[in-house]
Length: 555
Figure 1 (tube, one colour):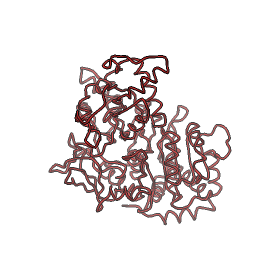
Figure 2: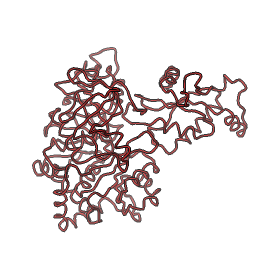
Figure 3: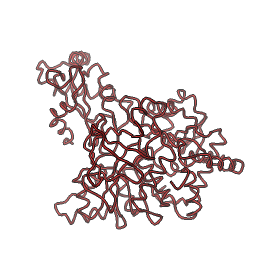
Figure 4: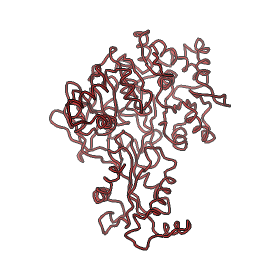
């Protein structure tokens, strides 16, 4: 690695590129640039404010915000202060955010909008370690909450007094020191905090840039959430390493519009985005499809990356046929995240590329993909047992099944863990959602589906006695015909309400949108369950494949 830590990298790029644009963002209908000098200066002000508030080296600072220029400034400020960024995903519920902040022992908190502030204030009494809250958007003064401008002002006034301490902390932080704790879904309901160091993130960003060969002449459009490691490393830290200008999309809904306005040379995305754009330009005339795609992505686009979920070969091939290169990579939060990547000069359809520089890949005896190198996490926060299970003899066990060909190209063939990955890259633990559903007295069994899809569906086996009782209480009756009960409108309506109530505290990605009512319980006799009463998921999904597929065909 060329630098000891991300702070040193940021300082050197600001010294080298000073007046050039580092960040581009849209506000009130107009685009604005933040130069490298300003980026560094604002981060130093916020870092000084954190020091003035008593934040020490290794302290955890929470950052609950959607993508915005202040997210990037705050991230660099937290690191410059020698602290650790803990960024819960913005769509999470108050209860989910509370768990992550409390588990990590967060002492200060930065939030974005009034909506995010309301979530935090809802659980504020359950976060005794949090000493202060800063709101990026604070319409009205609120007790115990500082505005971002006020916070920066405090730091600006304190910087002359604390500049020496900030410089000392930059020298003190090394590659093995913690930079962030990112919570990711595990095999139980509670997520695990992935500990990533400065060395993890730096090595990964540098290795990706080494094979993608981008530099200060490039303009990156960024829209994936920075609370996920994919965009954080590839877009945020990758732009830092390459000295590139990072342009922020306004939102996930405006990416196509922002593409036309910004004219980037590259962008990272998830398969769902490429699929939706392709569907929007569909035409029997291939030349017309190519023209429409080129118009959307602009004349300057060089190539695009895809990660977070499997990219269908048909989608990649459709783009390639139109002269647009969509290159698939592979990784996970625990690997900072990139393990392998198809490059402009070396790519093979149907694979996720070859190992990036410094990274080793091997296939275990059971077909599991293992990886070793500077990208492997430090471990799971306060969870040595899970760490020992994931990292053995230096090798990270990914939980994915795969193969390596003679040229070193990796193909992912399946998932060892029961973890659903939606087409937008969101990860969902089905057993957790199923447990919540089955906690309702009217739902006997539940099987959640959605691998590679853009939302969750489920197979629901009702607890018929309780359903009958609930209907009676509402002045309705359960159909006498057992075969007809599954499609009875009153039953479907009752279960819709129960599903909404059971999943009221989960994130939007974890909510079941549609379901099939299965009249008979899954059983050992039907080979749908093992003798120890564990669900044979593949058997059940195969048996009801057509019914599940129909849920995604319906408007």
